[in-house]
Every structure is written in C-alpha cells, then in structure tokens.
Image 1 (cartoon, rainbow, N blue to C red):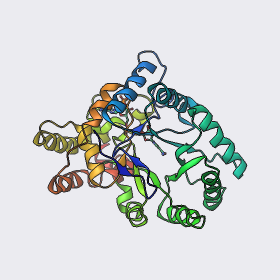
Image 2 (image 1 turned 90 degrees about the horizontal axis):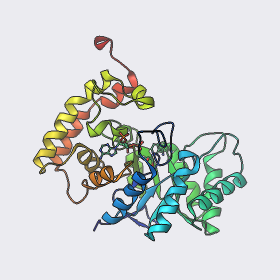
Image 3 (image 1 turned 90 degrees about the vertical axis):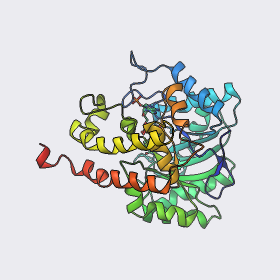
Image 4 (image 1 turned 60 degrees about the vertical axis):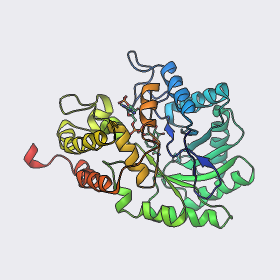
Length: 325
Ligand SMILES: NC(=O)c1ccc[n+]([C@@H]2O[C@H](COP(=O)([O-])OP(=O)(O)OC[C@H]3O[C@@H](n4cnc5c(N)ncnc54)[C@H](OP(=O)(O)O)[C@@H]3O)[C@@H](O)[C@H]2O)c1
C-alpha cells in the first residue's frame, strides 16, 4: 500500500503523489470529448487504477472543463466509496471582488463535487485586483464555517506566499500548500526562493505539470511533436535540446531495473521534497506513474539529472537561439 505524507501542518494525510484532473473534461488543451481521443470510461479507469493502488489525493479546479472535472471526480468518488482527499481551486476572475463571490464559488464547487466540505481549497493564481489578505480572510471564514479543512494557494511567489501565510496566521490557521509549476524542465521554484520558503514554513509544495505536459515521458520528439496548444508550447528545436536529458533519464531508469521516463521524472520531484500531481487520462498512464513510488533515486543520480536539466528552463522562455534558426 502507498505510504502517506502530511499535507503541511494540517494533520491531513495524503499519498506522496496525487492525480491531476485538468484533462478530465477539458476540450481546449487536452481534447476531451473529441473523436479519437480518450473517453469518460478511460478517465474512470484512471481513477479506479489510482484508488486500487492506494492513491488518495486528487487535484481539480472549478475552471477545469468548466466544472466537468469536479463533477466527474465527485461522481467517481461517490460510486467507489473511496475516502479521497479532494483539492479544488477558486479562480480570482477580475469580476470577483468580494468575499461573497468567493463563498458563492466555493458553494458551487462543493455542489459539483457532491461533498459538504472541501479538504483543500486553493486560490488558483495571485491575480489582482483583490488583495491576498482579503482572499485569506475569506478562506479563514470558510474554515470556521466548516466548509474547508485546509487552505492552499497556487502560483504564489515567495513574497506572496509569505503574505498569505501571515494573513492566515492572524486567524490562527496554518497555510497548507503552494501548488506551483515544477519539473525537470521547470526548476524555477528552486531558484526563486519558493521551495525554500515552503520548507521553512512547513508548507507542502505541490508540483503541477511534473511531466512537463507529457514531454518528459519521451513520447514526443522533434520529428513527432505534440499537437494543438502543446505543439506551440514545445517546438521541435526545444524538443531536440531535451533529448540529452531524456537519454540520461533512460540510463538511470535502466539502472533501476527498467524504470520508465515518467517514473524517473516523478521520483526526481518527490526526492526534491514536493508532491507531484501528474495528469492521467487512462489507467495505463495512472499505473505507469504510480511506478514512481516505493523507491528512490540516489543522491548521485539526482545530481546527474540536475546537471542534465541545467539551463533548459531558461532556454524555453528565452526562445530559439540564433544558431539553431
Ligand atoms: N495550479 C495550476 O495553475 C495548474 C496548472 C497546470 C496543471 N495543474 C494541475 O497539475 C496537473 C498535472 O499537470 P498537467 O496535466 O499540466 O501536466 P503533466 O502532469 O505534466 O502531464 C500530463 C499529461 O502527460 C501525458 N501522460 C501522463 N502520464 C503519462 C504516462 N505515464 N505515459 C505517457 N504519457 C503520459 C498525458 O497527456 P497525453 O497522453 O496527451 O500526452 C497527460 O495528460 C493538472 O491535471 C492539474 O491538476 C495546475
């Protein structure tokens, strides 16, 4: 059975890897519902495979599939009777200006999920105009009203994280988590102080897109890049630059008795102290990702992966170097 780790200092116990559910019902980014793509039965099979393996942590958001992801997750959990830890997110649209708007959104998420209390409720982005302190106050009200067990944030930088932590602290509540983009190809939280601050404050760092939207599985190559929006995010010239890292991952996987690329990518995140929430569209992906649990990369292997991925985050954002144009 899968071990449990603490979600911040909340007393809530989660599996060291969760399942991300953005693709569950999302058509624009992931192609849900398009012919030839994955079906609802595939998604249900992913959920069942994760539950059977002992995973209890699922991440969704009100905006995923415009509510479809929350509905599916709620229905699957009810039908399976599995005691899961549900994390969802409030999106601070610029027209949501009041604590009342926050509570309305929370109530709607609870209704879609079919639950009375959210285990972890997160502010999706630190967007203005509403101050961080106002949203944290709304969170604290919801905790006191018994609607939320734990409070999280997402995409907060170190300064914003500190403000959220302090504002909640004034209401006697510990911030549980900060969900940020973190993968071998996006190591910004190591350099911008976010990972260190999470550690210092006892806040769980939840790593989203830990497989870099499938790029770190090795199935997309310069000759066969992903299609759609992902194809515009990850161009062939960048996929070519990623190949040496993938080769290193393959070597390390072989040394561990045939661990796959996604398993190496996720184990690296776990070894760095974060909880990855890889997306899974079917049982095969969910089961494959679960193979990242129950073993650990050595310190030397982590250093090799750090070296092989050095500079790849910055390269993607800088764009195509002149020499390779
Ligand atoms: N807070 C935020 O702002 C934010 C932002 C993004 C994501 N998230 C959360 O993080 C979760 C994960 O991030 P993500 O979905 O962006 O990316 P990801 O986990 O890096 O990649 C997921 C995608 O990789 C492919 N995949 C997964 N496992 C695989 C396997 N074993 N073998 C081959 N392919 C595999 C699948 O897509 P294909 O089969 O189509 O390749 C899958 O949809 C989301 O579901 C969401 O819950 C949060």
